[in-house]
Length: 613
Image (tube, rainbow, N blue to C red; front, side, top):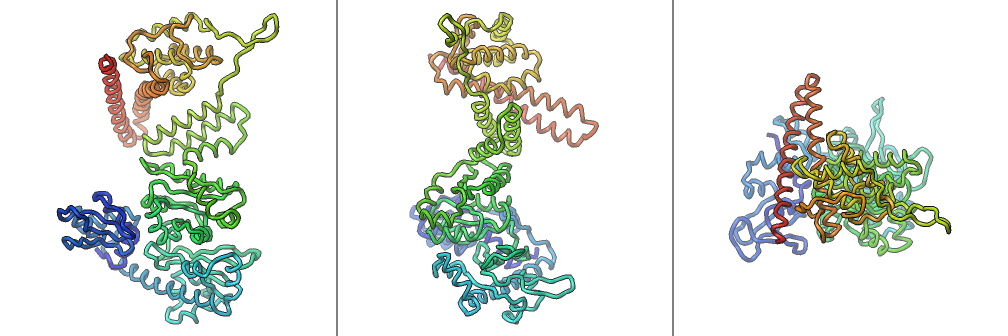
C-alpha cells in the first residue's frame, strides 16, 4: 500500500496517543506528559511516559519507544496494515489505495503546506508594516494584546488582487489556486482571494497552517464579514476545529472543552485565560467534529449566544448529536445573556462571569425539553399534542436503545407533568355555598370493579399482568404516567383492553385526590395477597414502588409490540423479502432479550419475600 510519511503524519495528528494507551494502560498526569508502569515489562515504579505533543511514548526502564502505530502493533499485536486501518477508521481517514496516485496526493499536500506557511509569514509581516497600520489599530481598539496577536498569528492581506504572486514567487499560480489562496475565473484569470482583511491562520491538530480566515475592517455592502478558505487537499472544514492544537493540551488539564461559534470568540476566551476553547469553521458542528470532541472529553460544553439565532444553533447541534449519543457521551449547553457574545460578556462582566456560566451548563436533555416547550404557543390540546410529537421525533433518532428508552421516559414524565397538572378539588353545593367535594368513594362503576378484581386474580401472562394491574390500583397516581404504554398494550392485546379501560376510569375518578395507596378504600378492589413485588408491599418507599412498577409496565407492553412488528414483517414479506428477513432476525433477537428480562424480573421478585423472612 502506498502509505506515505505525510499520510502517517496526518494520522498521528488526528489521534491523541494518550487516549489510545489509556484504554489498556493506567496513566496519571505528570506536567505536560502522562506516566505509568510500563506495559512492556514488570515494574513497580512508573518509568513509562507518554507525550501527546511529540506523539511518542518511551520507557526509561526497558527502552520501549514508539508512536501510536507501533503501540498498536507491539502492544496490541496487530499487523501494520490492521493497525493503520483501525486507527484510520477512528480518525475518519481513508487508507491510501494501492496505487501511486495516493502517494502523489500526499506529496501535493506537503507542497501546499509550504505555500500556506509562507503565506502566513507574509501576512504577519504585512500587519507590522505601513500597509497594515489600519488593521493593527483596529485590533488594538478591540483590546487584543500584542502577545495574543503573536500567539494566534494575526496578519493582514493588502487590497491588491495580484499581491500574492509577487510575495510568493517560488510557487506557481496553480499551487496558489490549489491552496485556496487565489481564485481562478471561468476565463482563466486569477486573483487573490483575501484582500484588505485581517488574517488568521487555521491550523491542524499538529499546528501546521492549512487554511485561513479573513475579517473585513469596516462593514461594506455586499462583502462578507468573514471569509474562510475553501475546501482544498489540505483543508476540510467539516473535519477541522479551529484552535484544536492549543485546546487539546489545555483540556487535558481542565477536563473540559468549550465549543464557541467563531474564532474571534475562541481568541477572546484565550485572552481571558480560558484556553480550552475551539470553534467550527462557518458551519454547524459535523459528526466528525463531534467525534473529535468526544475523543477529548465525555461531555463537551457548547456555548451559544442567547438570542433566537443562538437557540436555533444549539438545537442544530442537539439534533446532530442525538443519533450519536452513547453511555458517558453527551453534550452540555451554555446560553449567554441575550445580545452578548463571549467577547462582550468578558468585556462587560469579566472572565469570572464567563467561568461561572461554563461551570453551570444545561444538559442536552434540558435544552431539548425547554426549546421544544417554549418554541410555540401551547394554548390548545392540539398544540400540546404537537409538543409531544416533536419530542418523540427527537427521541426516535437516538440509536442507543438504553439511552433512547431513558430519554423517552424522562421527556414523557416532563410532558405529563406539564400537560396534565393536578386538578383543583371539585366544588359541590352546600347550604352555606360551594365547598370542596369529599373524595369519591364509589365513583368507579361496578362493572369496572369486577373487571379489575378478575384481572388481579391472576392467570394472565404468568401473573405479571395481574400484578401490574394490582400495583396501579394500589398506586393510581401512576396510571396517567403510563397511559401511553397501557393504551398501546390495549390496542395490541384485546384481551386486556377491558381491564386497562377500567384503570383509566379509576384514574379519572381519583384525579382530584393525592396519589396515595388506596388498598381497602370503600368501593375499590383490594390487591391480592401475593406480594412478591415491591409495589404491592406495605412499607415500600414511593420511589422504589414507582421504579419497579415502571419496569414491570415496560416489560408487559414491550413483548406484544415486538410480536405485532413481527406479524407486520410477515404480512409484507412478498414486497421486500430481504428487508423482512433482516428485520425478523432483529425482532427475534429483541424478543429473546425481552423473554430473558421477564424471567430475570420474575426470579428477582420471587426471591424477595424469602430474603425478607
